[in-house]
Image (cartoon, rainbow, N blue to C red):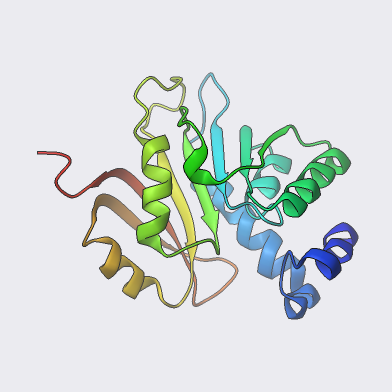
Length: 194
């Protein structure tokens, strides 16, 4: 936690007021995704964390053994923090210091995001990765998105459903009574599938 606190002073990784409750607000909030992820049978899961920032949830999931974790962060200072945090925690992650839109889609099992963008935009970022067909077998299920959302989730869902079709499960957050985790599969834009 000292690393997070030290770096937050210079590059604003998390809000200063949340530093007093790092465990619940950030670590537990991120870690709860592990139980919602598919369990690999033969091949480790591939996780893509969009807008990784302080490594939440991606780096936390990597530390917990979620599989091969790719962290995407366009801000160079935050990407440097992610590399340093991965080195200190000895977490095997891949840091992509690039904008999400510039990455060539690759096969993933899970796409995660926390405090990045409204749901309709998140789905636009995630859909190319979720639709890659020749992904490694091992989970027995199609790829999914796990997005942590707060009290405005209903408005975000209403807006997203104007552009996207999806199978959706809302799971109550274990860290915030107002929060939910959206577990989303079968994502496609309206009009792209008969």
